[in-house]
Image (cartoon, rainbow, N blue to C red):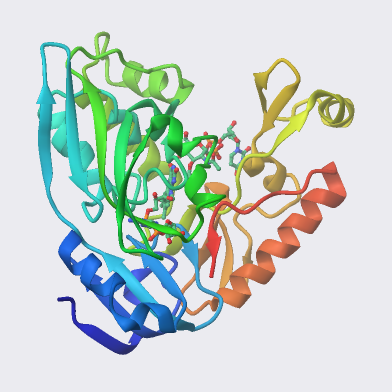
Length: 339
Ligand code: FAD
Ligand code: EPU
């Protein structure tokens, strides 16, 4: 049984390093721990929050309920043939440890997702993505426990309703299930995804003509380190907002005024804009306001310069949303979960 702690500081449990307290806190290391917790009286009495690595959350107040920190370990190969392998990992496995395991064993599919912070269990929640790959591309299934009943259910690919930084776990089933393991289908023959300009440039710099998955993993890691702040030295939660997807009519109006706007077509009448570009063009890149601001190399990343409160970061994000709206007529949506 997991140990219940009271009035626990959450500062070490969120990458923004926001100093708030949880009324109750329990860390679970197995499905058995979780079932015991879910069937105890503690659950019915209070609000619950499931936490993995805390790398996609912003706490704006103390949490007056029970935080369940998921630390279920273990990686195993469950099915293998000549072409593919299914690997299952515990929800508490650090995502990048799982990527390293795959790269070292020659299992292709997640190398472009190297160095994304957080846990395996959170990876389907917002369908993590980077450099042309999303978790949905390798997702096979996951096991999740329903909080209301303490019973488990398997979710297949179709059940999860994945979208850009989205899944059923952020919508209809928000806060209802706890994922305990995820199974991924990986390929033994690499079909590499090198379409991103930054990946191609870095491969060229290294004179690599026929990259393998290990090369891609290294190159992606290098690009990420150059652009994104390391949460162990400067608090942040990665991209604070999603890249907005707008319709063509609005896009053409914006394009008339801002011909160099960074954009990517995602369907015949839908265009994705780079939120970082919009924020930079409102004059916010690298700005420091009190204890918060945006990162000098990536305006989409809001940071904690040391002593920021969640409220301070949140208010700054409101200011950014209003400025981008006033200038471009586009309202940014937060990617980070506000708690
Ligand atoms: P947490 O922050 O702990 O939780 C996130 C949400 O998932 C919460 O709502 C929580 O309740 C829920 N949750 C967590 N675990 C479970 C579970 N087992 N069962 C049910 N619900 C759960 N994201 C990307 O997609 N691409 C990137 O390139 C990327 N880069 C980043 C770079 C930096 C420097 C940082 C700090 C973050 C970045 N992120 C990126 C965001 C973050 O890494 C991902 O969202 C990650 O999946 C969060 O994992 P976590 O374990 O920290 O989740
Ligand atoms: N840009 C600017 N100014 C900025 C930042 C970006 O002009 O300050 C421009 C860049 O020049 C580039 C474009 O915006 O032309 C896109 O920038 P980048 O390649 O850095 O990617 P992004 O769209 O800002 C997205 C994800 C990241 C992911 C990278 C790589 C979202 C919300 N963010 O960022 O994910 O790592 O692509 O694929 O989709 C995250 O979700 O936390 C995250 C970091």
